[in-house]
Image: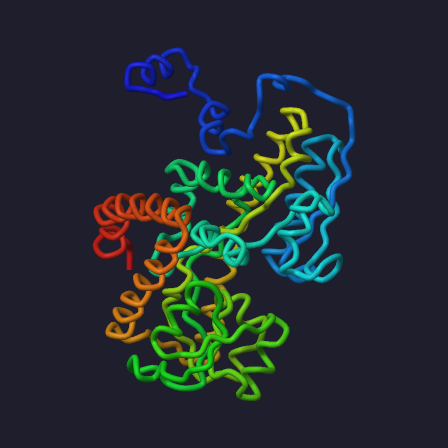
Length: 373
C-alpha cells in the first residue's frame, strides 16, 4: 500500500494508520501471506530443525537463534517447535545453507557472505567494506528495495531470507606488529574473511581462513600475525588481549554486518498466514535484540579492556584511503563478472549515498556539535 500525504493525513484523523500496516511494508514482501491462506488458522503442528553457523550456545549470535525458536513457539501456541543445532552438532557450520536448501533442515542461521562462493551477490546483504552501518543496512533491506532483491536471489536456491541480527560496526582487529603505513600490510598473515580478505590481498597481505576455535592458537604460535573477530565483548572472551600487542580500530571491513535466517521455501509456503507472520515478527524481534546486545556488551567490554591497559590504536588515514581504493577494485571485479551482483550493489550503493547525505546533516552533526561531552 502506497501512502501519499492526503491519505496519510486522513489515516491519522481516522486513527487507521496502525503498527500492523506499517510493519507489513518492512517485514517482507511476496512471501508474507497470500490471499489463498490469509486468515486461515490451522491446528497442525510443525517440528522443525534449525542449523546454524555459530558454535553451540555462542554468546548473543547463538543465543539469538534460541530466542527466535522460543518466540516462535510461544507466539504460535506450540504449533511450531524449532530445535536449534549449533554449528557441528548436526552438520558442519558452513553446510547450513545446503542443508536447509535440501530440506534436511527447515531453517538456518548465519551471515550471507558465507555463501559468496554459491552466489557472489549474497555477500552484499551481509557487509560491504566502507559501507553502511547497521541502521542503514536495516533501512535498505526493510525499506529501500533490499528485501525484494534478497528474496529474488534466494528464490533460486529454494530459500526465504529474513534479517536476523546485526553485529554493528566491528573492530579492526588484533595485531602483533604495528601498522603505521600500507607497507606494514605487505606479507601480513591475517585471519579475515569475505570481501575484507580480498581487499587485504590487494594491499599485499595474506588472508588466512581459520575456524573460530583455531584463531587463538594460530595467533599465539605465529601462524597468523593478526586477526579480526567481532568486537570487544567476543574478542575478550576469546582472550586475544592476552596474546596480541595492539587492538586496532575501525573495522573498515565490516561496518554493520547483517545476520540472517533462511527458511526452506517449500516448507515456508505450506504454512498458514498466521504462522508466516509469526516467523517474520520473531525474526524482527531478534534483529533488534541482537544489535542492542552487541552495542551494550561491547561498550562494557571496551571499558574493561581500557582499564587493563590494552593498547588501542587507530589505523592511519593514508592506509584507510588505500584500502578504500582496493575495495572499489574488488567490488568492480565482482560486479563485472556477475550481473545479479551488479544489480544488488547498484541498489546498495544508491541507497548508501542517500543515507550518507541524510546522516551528514543529522548524526554527524550530533556527534560533532550536539552530543554532551
